[in-house]
Structures are given as C-alpha cells and as structure tokens.
Image 1 (cartoon, helix red, strand yellow):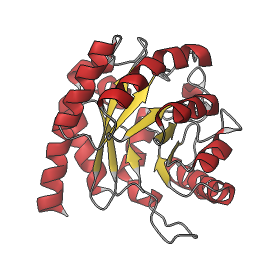
Image 2 (image 1 turned 60 degrees about the vertical axis):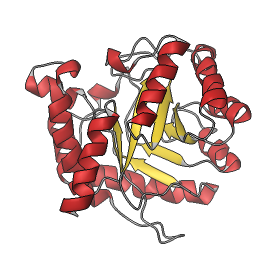
Image 3 (image 1 turned 180 degrees about the vertical axis):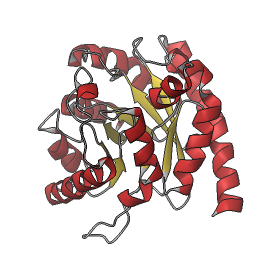
Image 4 (image 1 turned 135 degrees about the horizontal axis):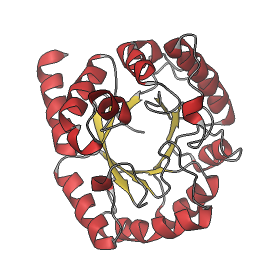
Length: 273
C-alpha cells in the first residue's frame, strides 16, 4: 500500500526520444542507470518510467516498440535497484502483464484511465497493482481540440466519481487520481483546475480513505507557453506551482527535478501545514 501521509515525489524518466523535455530522456542503459541513481539520491519516492511519449499531437508507437525500449531498463532495475518503488507510464495492459512477469509489483500510471485499452482495469485488478488514473479526452493526436468544458473542475470531479466506482467494483483496491494537467485542457483551464484542486478530494465509499491526488505540472506547456519561454527555462515556475498544488491538496508531485521538489515538500510539511 502506497503511504501518502506526507507528500511524495515521483521522478520522471523517459525512454522515448520523443519526449517534450529532452533532459528527462535516457536513450542508453548508462544514461538510465545514472538518472535513476541520481533521482534516488535526491530523494525520489517513486520513479516513473515511460517508453511511449504521449505529448500532444503525437501518434503512439506500437506496443512491441514500447516493450523493446522498456525491457532493458527493467532489467537494470531488477539487477541494480530491486527495492526501488517504480511506476510504469503505459496505457497498454499487454505491457503491464509483461512487465509484471519480469519485475513483479509496480504502480500502473495510465494516462487513459483504462479508456485506451478495455483490458487494463481488469489486468490491474487481477495483478493487485496500485493504479494511477489520469483524466484526458481523446488521444494525444486529438486531445487539444477537445477542451470544451462548461466547468472543467466539476467535470473532472464527476469523471473521477464515476471512474473510482467502476474501478473498485472491478476489484482495484488502490487508486490515485491525476487531473491530467495539459491533457485536453487549455492554459486557462489548467490553472482553474489547479486553483480548485481541493474539489477533487473525496473518499472511497468502500474503504473510507481519501484517494491520493497526483499533480503532474512539471515544465509543461501551461507554464512555458504562457511565459513564452521553453521547458528548459521553466524550473522556477514549476516549483511555484508545485507548492501551490501541495497547498491545494496534492499528495504526489510528478516531476523532472526531484531535489527541488523534495526541498519544497520539506518546507511545506514543516512550516505550512
């Protein structure tokens, strides 16, 4: 069971060369091991590994290509970091099953909340894996044309009220909700969602426990497009928004920069709670 009695940091490692932020990309085993070691040293609670980029406008790579990118990294995790907590950023149940057979337990981080693969929720329940469900609409190719909300916060809340009920009925026991910053939301809608993040805090009717909230804001276009800069120049603004996310109820920060996020959490926990 993932403990979120204090905020956690999830570090991002991308194995695809198509990531929107090049500094998070590891194209060789040596780069992967070096990045993984540094994130652990900097205090990462979870390390999120993804091999299929989902940046807006991009078509997903085939499943076999995703696995071929992922498998060498999982070998190194199994050999060098067997006690590290990892999550796999994938929307494919096939990848989840193959990875589970390879390394055992991990956290599923699914940007589609099971919508892109009808077998995913059943797979998560059968393997008894924690499941991060993210809100989006459409696919990475189409989602930025699907930002028509009457009230983005309330519609995302309603989405998760429905999703968590279905997922628990299927048998998923541990659910983390991710509002999906940058996925089928305009810049203004992203900030409205961040401002009203507390509205997404609700309890499981089965366990009575609050579903943890994951905030994935790090270096995204809601920052650099608004500021007319770039992902590479977005660390300071990312840190400011991560602190706001904590104030508004986030339990997990998904970030490219682990050390800075851990420092923010240390200040938040000691002086702002």
